[in-house]
Image 1 (cartoon, rainbow, N blue to C red):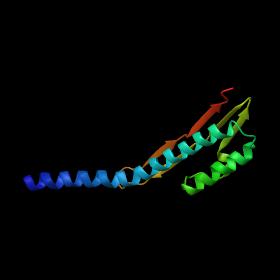
Image 2 (cartoon, rainbow, N blue to C red):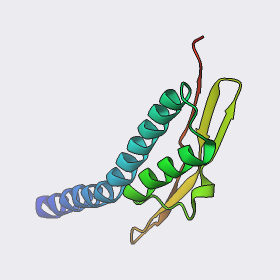
Image 3 (cartoon, rainbow, N blue to C red):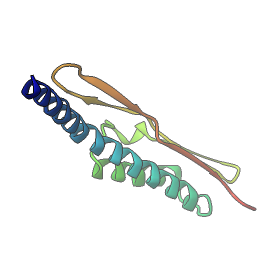
Image 4 (tube, helix red, strand yellow):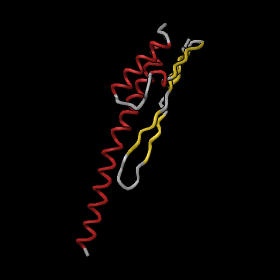
Length: 115
């Protein structure tokens, strides 16, 4: 009986490690992209870089992180009255044997001039 309990515990721990190994990199990429969006919005608030140039910069970062965005136009960039807003949305499918699931992400940032 103790052996069976031990096997069940190891199976649960192993399943947790397996799912964690699939999910953690996805969240890591999301947080890196979110940080890049916030930095870009903060910096570009005080420059004259065009919306398309900002979009291309974020598109390159998304490609580096292997995010499932199909085209640069999936990243919305708006510049209005001293504010820069960057946003996008994407879904990552996690394919685990018993219960596959999707993780939805919506990284976004808006920054306004201080003066």
